[in-house]
Length: 335
Ligand code: SAM
Ligand code: SF4
Ligand code: SF4
Image (cartoon, rainbow, N blue to C red):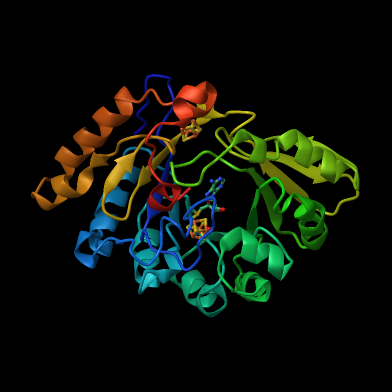
């Protein structure tokens, strides 16, 4: 089945956040001043169970979803996550099952995730230098832990791996070419992400965004590159390849080159709210519906009605007026 919104965009992707907790405190996502000791995370009973998530995922796949990405907070903090992966992998009609992680716990978990049916993985890594890495995530975890996670994922067959690097002015922009050099010739695909005005706690300012054009210029100052065609409609990263055959990289320019026209993504939070946009100010409560005994047909009708009404195009209309909105936090909808 294909359902479309008011801009004729089909529903194709589902991002499922499995926890609001994280062992990092990246200031661009969960600043310590807000997510400190007093922050109250969701109690276990408010989280969707794996059975509930699987039931919803099946409904979404019937509505046209082809790709599911597990995210968080930090998804590898959710106990027995492999069991959920196994349940999702068994859903007929799902083409792609992937996960985004900060990589800190990946070394010991990659093998079980792969065995459970995970097809691909994205690892976030903002720097190779420990000091810069710490400034980007505000905890004392050495870079080598993430690199070991990437190696473990490679060894068990999850490669090629996508590596996400958020670039922030004055913090890690000088690491762009270091990371590019590190991942050339590895087969992994580094993706540079413009720092976004997600949520309302990170104090985002346009001056802190290193634009896609600047990132590309940094890469081009060292290597000759050329654009590559998108793999599919709605691919968020603009693809490039090194002309010397060292591989490809991507740039996700959600601030300076909005791609709302092709946005086919729905987001499900750990407590069962759905959001039709990363920058939405409100979600819709699927958990209440689910726990009040609604049948699959009721839930299907609810989701379909929300998608039909969808008008979101935040990145295209971003302005001083929209930046002050009370938007959902990235750690809740999972990026
Ligand atoms: N904890 C996992 C991780 O960091 O990979 C998964 C969740 S995290 C919210 C998903 C992605 O969003 C990460 O790659 C992270 O770097 C990115 N992200 C978070 N806040 C961002 C922001 N303000 N601008 C751009 N990307 C951001
Ligand atoms: Fe945690 Fe990922 Fe957010 Fe960093 S970006 S605080 S690792 S959820
Ligand atoms: Fe999709 Fe909203 Fe991002 Fe536009 S701003 S690409 S609609 S999530």
